[in-house]
Amino acid sequence: MTDAPITVAIERRIDPEQASVATTWMQAGTDLAAAFDGFLGSGWVRAGEGSDLWYMLYRFRDIPTLEAWEQSSQRTWWLNSGRPFAREVRIERRSGIEGWFDAPFATHVESRTPGSPLDAATTGPIVQPIPAAPPRWKQAVTIWLGFFPVNLLASWLLGFVPGFGAWPLVVRVLLTTVLLTPVMTYLVLPWVTRLLRPWLQR
Image (cartoon, rainbow, N blue to C red; front, side, top):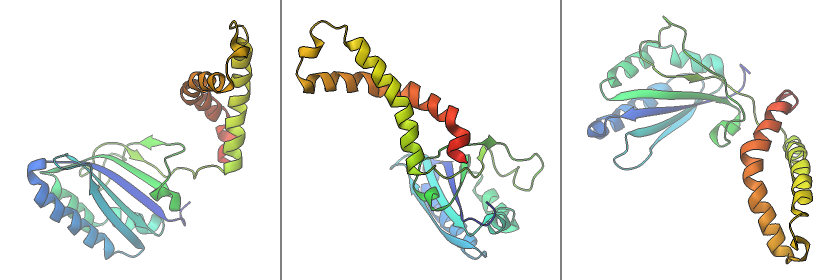
């Protein structure tokens, strides 16, 4: 994974009264990072006007170039200069181009090593690089393995509802999907995904 592009997403709480200062500060951080080898771009957005939640993304060629930036004296100085009005609450690292778009398939959260150069300037969890999403065919198999037994059981149970078979097809399908969608989403698919995780990540 060390030779794959790394995207870092940072969630910060910013003092709303210091928004103009924070805007300049965020741009200064971007300019500093751009001077480092392996820098592939960055950007930041606010959750909304008046919100104290800001998001920043930056991307480096690989882990060594990313760590050169993250462990640099320039970044440490920049983070310290923002401490009066900015607080990091979450950092997530993603590998591959999917880091810009896809939701995480799995995460491994750990804290910074006590005494590290950035420990004093950073708070909150660090989410380390995580596997890319599994191939679509594996996702399809996983969904089918969960959906088939659930649908079979539901069809059998609904057969005991008096007159259910005589209802219009649209009504039967509507009822079935309304009942099964939350069951699949909140119970079955998370369980099947955990069960098949070694195969999905292989």
